[in-house]
Length: 476
Image (cartoon, rainbow, N blue to C red; front, side, top):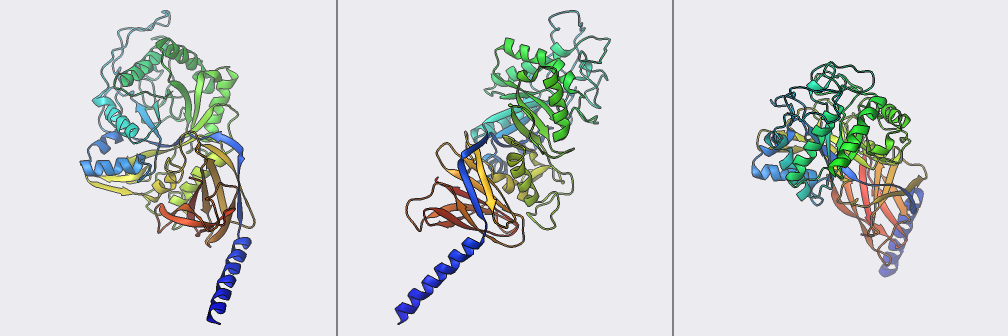
């Protein structure tokens, strides 16, 4: 009798579990429905934040670098954005130029621009050379070098700050002539300097937020004006025999960049680009750009006091908010890469994902772990975003990526308060019933905590707690 009652209890429990699963939402993954490729996630350490990392003691330095770039203990960032200097000097927070003083003369009448007064990369490019080597050793695949401005003597306002335009583009007139070729030469020299140190720059940008006039390094540009420079920069790169591709235009927001991309397209210069880049400040990512080029979000953060929470009030700086930002950029805006602003810095606001204090303290925010779900630990080189849709009443948002080895990484964000019992279909599963697949959970209490989900060999059954992000990795 006891054995019969035990068997009955087990059967009733199984029925109850099945009923709960059937009543929850179903996520349908379709590996045959392919969208954009995946380049990765990334950060910058521009404006001498590489120096801040370098000055940490050895143990703390390795800890911070592994948090950023390791695909076993960290976020698995695979893109590093370096800043190209334009300042004549380099107190902290500035990036010094490799051509800080103007040549004796310049003339728009000569075909070959005059040689600039080059100096070696200042302090190895403010320790960005050191960081690049450290990042590549830990798995970074792409290095993007971006200039916030041309040098002041090349611009209409005579300084690398407060906007101004590059002399020689449409609607400019400078007594010193056309500086477009000189600016192109300087950028190529920068690439060659890195090449001599064993580092290949994959993408090169010549603008940063060209719709903003700021007290730090900045340069204004419309789409037409960008096109005026692109034709010269592209040919200069070709003549130098470099494979680096051009990126543009790092507009302060999605729509601000769309405007400049449209201008480039109307000028017939889109084919000079290898990458379209935008920020998320002035306007968040929305409908995709009308281009067949790869698109990255290359900078976004907030500036309120530093926030370590995953979810407390639903503020703009919490981890759950950023998990949704990242997911929607891939799922709605069709980006192939997503970069936060600083990875690690001594900032007391939310410009960085890791807070560094002096030479030893390294403190991680929940925003780092939001990025980690989209890092190289789960989504690998050559991956493709695939179809994923939710049916049933649900507070879930979902994305899925297929790796080249056939494994699938599914990101389930539950924005509701209550747990969701999710049935996942359409992915390759372990052979035989009763198997398990690996999961990783992040919420207020967990930082990428590993677990398991049940499978019957046909579907996966997972619980996604409220206000949480669960990654399910199937077929690995």
